[in-house]
Image 1 (tube, rainbow, N blue to C red):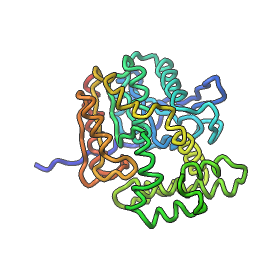
Image 2: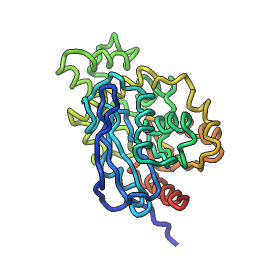
Image 3: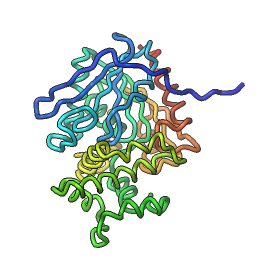
Length: 319
């Protein structure tokens, strides 16, 4: 019997949208899809700075889920655009709690991929009592080693052609600390330089997250507005190591002991080495761990998507 890979649910529009005033200068866009009153869930997008897309709504069975998706501070439809003030991991954790309270639920499934997995872990370790299940894809624990692997030396060896384009805007004398060199330009006053560097930063990521080239995934990383928010916010968070202590997310994984979960990770994930997802699976025994052969980082890759849909389907039965 052929085991057919699962794919996204049909296209769906939100049944409710709105803006959350955080009270400290940010207005966060949110939307709600599925069936009101069904199993509650929240979707945490990647980046940071990536924003939500219409396809993200389709990771959940709309008949069995009531899902909140939101654009994290400074990106997507949230305002002010590309703003870095009062924009940290812990501000976002507080925003998730505000949205849960607004929804009026005690617990919800938390789904996060890439940076969204980092944020999901930070949230779940701070508020384990409010998490029914965790679904994590492309686990990123935001250690110094992970940052250096992607932005200094490591992935550079796998994609020398793309790396050459990534470092091109930075003078050779500043290339010993590329995150710092990019930060100087991304927060600088030269708008043309800011856009040029934002696009170089964004394209590097967009073109290295899939095992094989996938223009449908990478093309929007080339767009000026998307790149500006993505690069500024991502560089801001990574420069500050996510306002996390070194190794904090793995160290505190014991706080997830009462939470059921699923970890899905591509064997050939370039931005997020599989080692850290594997370590998390060891520190969190209640999690199912799926290491997907022939896959990179993106949720759209067939083997990864199949496991994510199977996870949300299975947890729908817990309601």
